[in-house]
Image 1 (cartoon, rainbow, N blue to C red):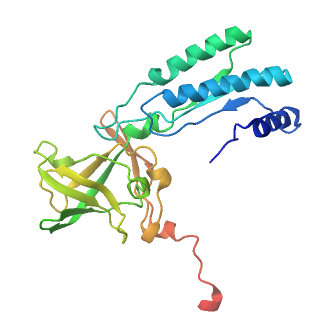
Image 2: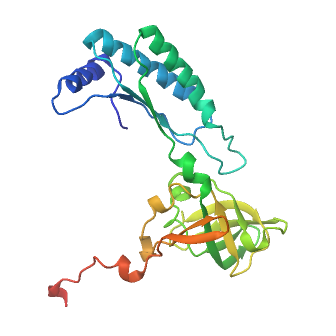
Image 3: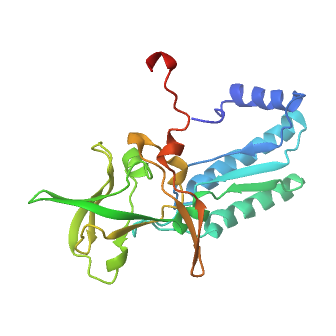
Length: 262
């Protein structure tokens, strides 16, 4: 939904306007082709289009752009189904093509920008929940409820994102019990993981969901007046709080009762 259409009568007037504007320092072009990608085909296709735009800009306006942003979208591992690729898989073929293009055009290679985002922090995060009510509907489904849900991780409800989990205090036990991990909100969509195999769960167990380092805290909400959980940095056997647990007082600090209602 962002960016410019590539129709000549749209993109080139926009480029010309940017070049001539006293308010804009037109550095170059930027594309972003998707998220959680495990194939470089779309990056390479977008790169060809961008390099042609660089050439057309030189030919039409005698203007050499200085920067090319090739976006991100580099996928991480959420489940065994994710075929995670190294950065080199995406970047090496693009850099080779950019270098060859720059030599052919006899221009300085543009500065290359990437947006690694999720791929840096996604797998670094683990969310810990305490298991509460367990509801076994015989022959239909067994629900294991936790003290969080869509308020701290909206991705499963928003676009059916998949995750894997383990009961942290029973990690060495066989995972033979088929369950659905449900959140605490009064919403049918507040399901964190559907059909997960875990050890036999009990109230008070600690459930760990992996790869929650991206788009968890950043997309959290106070829906149903649930406070944000704390975020803890763990390194080399030490732990430090980097985001404090939200209190109810903090959550409602900006709420005001009008005098007319008192």
